[in-house]
Length: 343
Image (cartoon, rainbow, N blue to C red; front, side, top):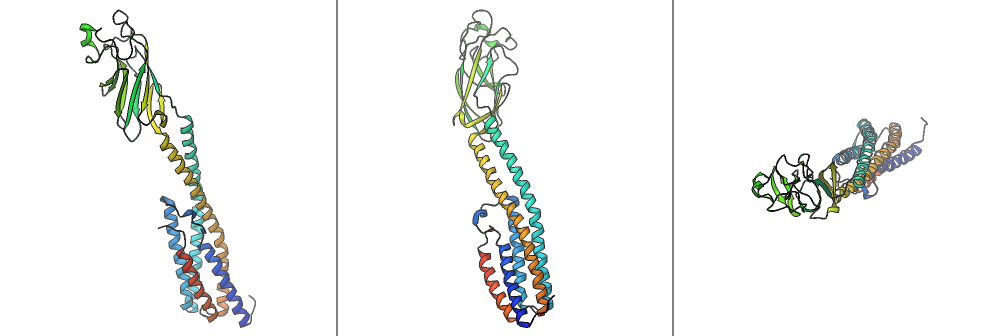
């Protein structure tokens, strides 16, 4: 180390302290705009809160220096270096964590886009008159009740001989069953009527009817004929279903003729926006951590320089340095109040 006169040494020490003030404050004030002053959640909130505590620890250590002996000051300076090192190490780790979170959010965002682009928005089912098993169904896969309106179009019958063979609409062929009415699957409903079934009971029937489906409830559709006698039926019904909020506001997943009301457009668009915001936020936090990690290198280097000059001065309470530390305390206090770290 070079040998200086007292005046030049104090001057250089003063410069070093000013440099350290600027560097440390630039590290501490790592978010110059309120862009991240949002509603933090989960990992983001935890990281920001913990970093705020650690920054306060560095500030506390800096404020101790003017009132300490040379030996205690050396210990405090070592604490400052150690705390900066921890913040740096954590920043490096968290940069990678938030990079991964951003990648995961991006993946989920693309999945939501695929759901929006690929979901089946058709609103009809085909029910052949002869179908007695593997019936078309409608399931409420949402977390809230949905009101459903059914419109059936087509002609079918419930047998091959007159009067059962007469092709009729989904309101059925009333009066045609005669004494066989009691043999029908649902004896209190017209033969050849479209029946909406829930829990093996008549839920509704006819060409047009409405009902409400609770979350996870399922209904089936069937031609009202005698059990086991569906093989000689002909014709079909096209069953169109509508929802009270307009069918275009919902997406449906289909497995054959089994339909599940799965997503509302509003919910998917909301999820897409939430993920988009998450991608932006995690990218900002990742960059923040990466910048913080790099900038602390300079702060640690300057701390090492201060240590060397303090050794030369053998003091942390020299009047010139004390005035700089007093200015530092006020500067840091003012800036700390403006740190955009939500609680």
